[in-house]
View 1: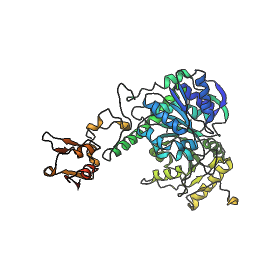
View 2: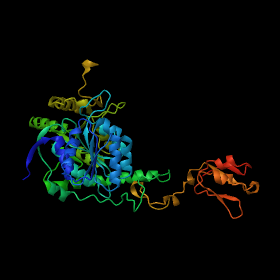
View 3: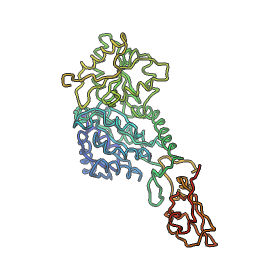
View 4: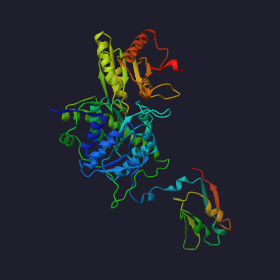
Length: 396
Length: 88
């Protein structure tokens, strides 16, 4: 049996990255991701990651640029970042996906400045939604660790070849100590084949990556990226199953459900709040309330069909967002869930809530209050489509 | 470009042989042979080497790559090269 060890979430993820045998790690520290690259720096200095080259770059912009160069040269790469660091990478994120380089990056989700906040929400990665990166969200340190070899296997598939962010909540998961199974090297070698890209940068066989495209051919490259994302929809599911076969752990593929089958109220969420919601649902189910949870594991590609199928019998759908599109007063899940249901025969009210921004705690009572609001909305209809569930009116 | 596209915009060397960048052009240079004094200023001033000397000492324009910048027309002392709006 696998051995449980009490470690910090960041250690579990750094260890998972190590056993994936990366060749190059360009890293720049930023709270709350720093512990991941610190641990990897230690592993590299100890010679525990083989011939891995650990590059201490001078910014996140350099980190992502080095990732691109290394990946194009055929290296398996790893890095981690968050918030302002991810934002600094923004323009290069498009280059990575456009050049079809399967970079893997852990994002320790953190709020965006200003006002300055180092605490958790999902604004940083959600703001990078359209950069062409796969985005998976983990609910606990074990899933975040297990997600690491999974995303390598997904994004290095020759039909996909897209970069991926493995997202997990800053501080809440990066800094928590809890028992995890550290990924075994032998199982990981069995699960994850070596990176063998079809095209690499090689002076003896020169090629240009991301060459100039005039208007007559540009859209076709974007379309090919979309085809890669479509292929990832299936691959994310099969890789989750393959992982389960080898390691014996499963978290859902594109989505996962908790009391979902007969749920009248379906809460929809991503990340660490899933754990809180599951505890609350255990209580509410004991009281006979038909409440269920739809966990979104893959935000990009967005699992439209899986979501339609999962919610089609609900009385109300309640997306819970740790992000906001200012000017729409909605989080990303709310907007995308609604968009997924339009032009279908599914006509179910969607009641969106935003909470936990800038690291504000989400206690079980808040989830219960949201459920009771949803119960009222089933009877009375929706008056406000989307709002903050934890706004402190007394400060305004 | 008529061949199939490779993902990631990955191309082998020599791709400009098939990628005819003359499609950028808005104004097309028209060379009036009868006015030309064969001074060669147009050939020297073309940034894209698209003005090519022929066997009789006159010039022709490589429209596959000429981007219509008009430098040749501007520099020609005899107004030999006329820039004409190109309808596509």
